[in-house]
Image (cartoon, rainbow, N blue to C red; front, side, top):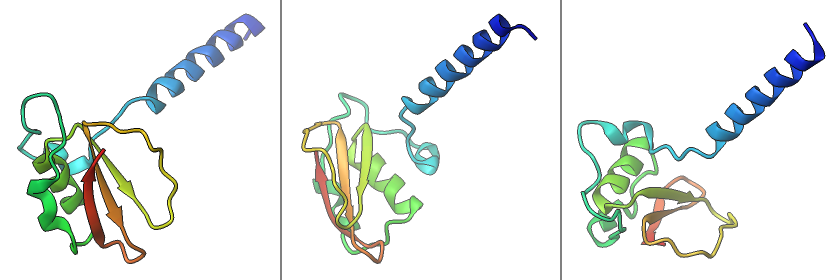
Length: 107
C-alpha cells in the first residue's frame, strides 16, 4: 500500500469521525411513536414540571424532551460546568447526585 493511499484513507477516516462528533442525536426512545411538537422547536418548561423529583432515566428524559417541544435536551449533573449561552430550543434537566431531577428550565 502506498503512502498516498494511506494518507487518503487517514483523511477520509478523520473526516468521517469529525462528522459523527458534530451530529446531534435525540435520546434513544425519543422517536418512540411521537415527535416533538411542530413549530420552531422553542422550549416550554411549564408542561414538564411534573418531572421534578422523578428519576433521570432514559424514559423520563425522553418524555421531558418531547413534551417541552425543545429541539435539544441538556442533562446537567451536580457541580457540572455548563456554558452560559441561551438557546431557546434547549431544555435543561438538572440532576442531583442520586440522579433525581431537581429542576427543568429552558435555555
